[in-house]
Image 1 (cartoon, helix red, strand yellow):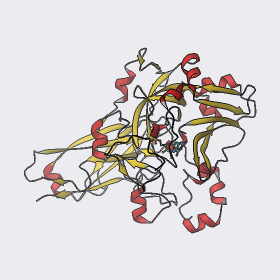
Image 2 (tube, rainbow, N blue to C red):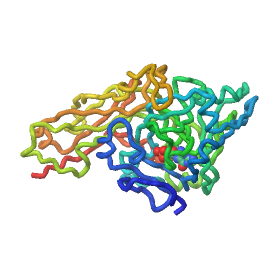
Image 3 (cartoon, rainbow, N blue to C red):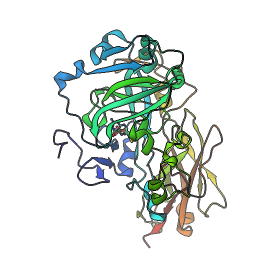
Image 4 (cartoon, rainbow, N blue to C red):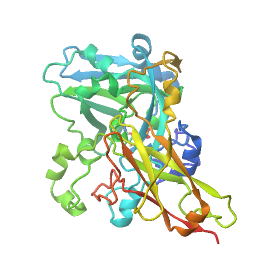
Length: 399
Ligand code: MTE
């Protein structure tokens, strides 16, 4: 395959055929790794072949800043390291298709079946995009920053856009990153340079970045228009193919993540040894939300949503916030954004095994600081994205 040069961990579960490479780790192993995901188990979403970049070529990797700017630039990774301040942030990336499998079970969407492990977290080191765009001096009518990668696909290079005023807001921490967890990016994750757009769907974080184009309109890239959207639920695959107007409507483009949660333990199909087990089982999993909004509660139900109990939450990122004024992995850890959260958190609750024995399933839902809560019902849409109804694990009793 075209990706013969790319090293990959054998634990990754392929979600599509041989090529391109799309995979997630086993949820239980992802959870057990804890707050930071190693590149080995970090989910991968590639639309095509991974660009081959030798180690010796990385510092010379060049991207342009062009479009509605007074001062177009060509910048290398070497320039970013030598002339710009480098910072490190803990950031969770999530594919908009995370949990799509459940949508496909209800009605086939136009996307492949992610389980609940299309989410991962790393310390990203790089340069805040604001510092780069400022040097290029955007013109008054500039409103968007379009990004384009080096991967040539059937419909052109992968690209998308975000609003310029988001990029210019330092609290949003939009960056170009060259390291994950202190190591240079691996090929699947954008070696040597990628965008990272915290709090938004992974699809906006363009890998192998080659161009930043400042514009007055959102990106007209094929992948910006025909991917990463939640179309109205009545638009089925036929209708969406017949009628391009559905795709052209920027209101349906996804940016911020919404609250979501999943249970890692017990796993689907896990047999609980309820009769002989210790008196409680620690039910546990992850949760996240978008736009820098923190998850403020996670709730479990054993009676199909009639009553709920509050789970404990561990905000592991706060242990990194405690490193204020220190440098991490060659980048200053900038905590101006301490009031925001761009990371997943972990919830858990001890439940008496006798109660589990009587229940048929465990439901979990999360709420964020805007009081946005995971819905009871699924919102099916043609791309099967942003699936976040209450997460359900059926209880299997081994007795
Ligand atoms: N960037 C390029 N150049 N090509 C791609 O195929 N996929 C996007 C985004 N950036 C993609 C890309 C999507 S849909 C996601 S979810 C994230 O990258 C996945 O990032 P990861 O593979 O590092 O987890």
